[in-house]
Image (cartoon, rainbow, N blue to C red; front, side):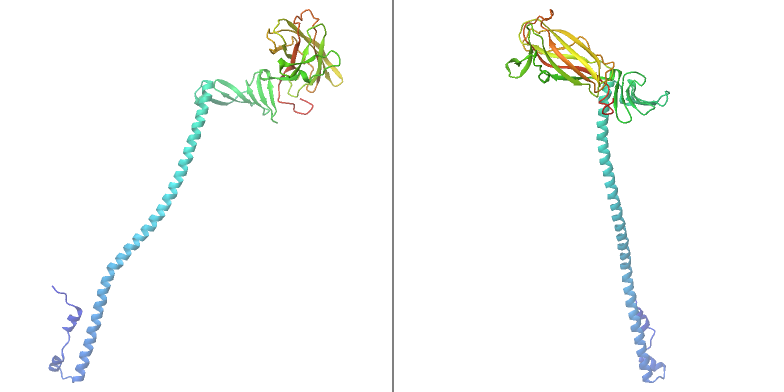
Length: 354
């Protein structure tokens, strides 16, 4: 059914000029004014209809605008959510990287522990044990197979070795390291024979070592006694009170057999006093090979009962071919002479005191 406009409906309510003349006694001027007013009303209504039509067209547009606005707001929120998600992803990635590195570090640690585990024969879960002992406030730390291997003593010293035994390494509060019992180790003072003192009379000749041109002192195998003089200081890492073991490196100059009798005369000086002296002797056999080095310890030791660091030891090394036990008839060359000594610290705590 066709839609009737408001304008058409209003026209149905107004009278025409002829109807007004037939129904009224209005003059023509009044009728003309009536018709003009009616026409103006109809035009206004027509504009109202057009405006309403426009408004009806705008409503869907407004709805679309609202939908677009909602979508825009959704996109803005989504963008914020995406930014937040990206930040979370970056954090997760950073955590993953850290975890991956930690996993590698842990793998290295586990590998190290397993290697150590292989040494002690225990699984990694029982590798280390730390416990509070009932002995004063001694804190013991130990590997399962070797319990109480490390201890922290009441005085704060760190002890490595049996906590109640006599063999251990101890680190004092100032960092001084001390070796006790079987933990002590040996060092060597070895002096080149060429660096010893050659006396004006009775010194050995210098000969070329096996035709190399490098000269070494050669002690005569004839009737004369020849000797060298030397000295050294008792070192600051020396375990005071322990004995020293003198030794000699020498070589025969021929392939002949025989023995050489070596002697070492010494004195130990502490300040103005000679606190020890003596002569040590050793008989050493030639090897049967010319220029073959022989190491030999003297049969006795230098008594260290009263010896302390910085004491001075003077000595004379000589060969007495007139001794009945000296049967090697040729030159015997000396390379070095020295002592092995025991140490219980890496040095002295003070310059002049242990």
